[in-house]
Length: 196
Image (cartoon, rainbow, N blue to C red; front, side, top):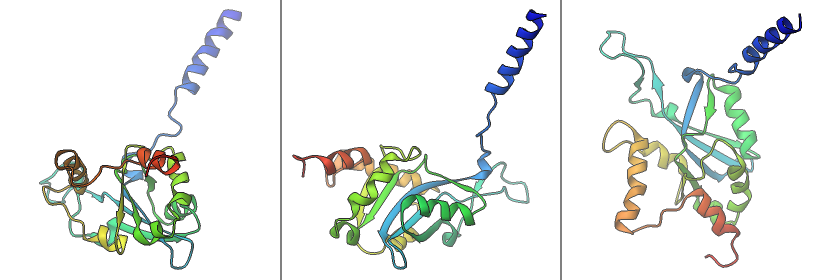
């Protein structure tokens, strides 16, 4: 009797403990490529997100699987005013059918206005604690409107803007014209007493 009970407990535990309760289908996620921060107009912070737009295959059967949508620039850059980063993310997730996923975010942008006001330090702490954002994401400062900057960014070398972002920052190692600043190095220098 004990042996049967022990074996049944083992079987039940393997079924319960090995399940994927938090798994998501790729169609349920919206992969964010760029996160931008600007001073909000109606609230404290304006969050601008650029993401990879994914659509269905063409109806005539020429392509199989997932294809990129072209010419739909209004839908791949979104912005919202919110009191904090996490509140803004919750607002985005409440009106979009797909959940935002930040694990592919390659670029974090701050506006010059936000940097000159000294408010970057207030918004960088939630980013570094957020488990989905990589510490290897690049950080840049943009003059002017971040929304217009992201809306006008189009791929030069292929069909993916993410590849252009990656190649752009790899060029800083080859040319030395601009420094490559990652989120981790930015936060380290921000809290350092000896770095500029």
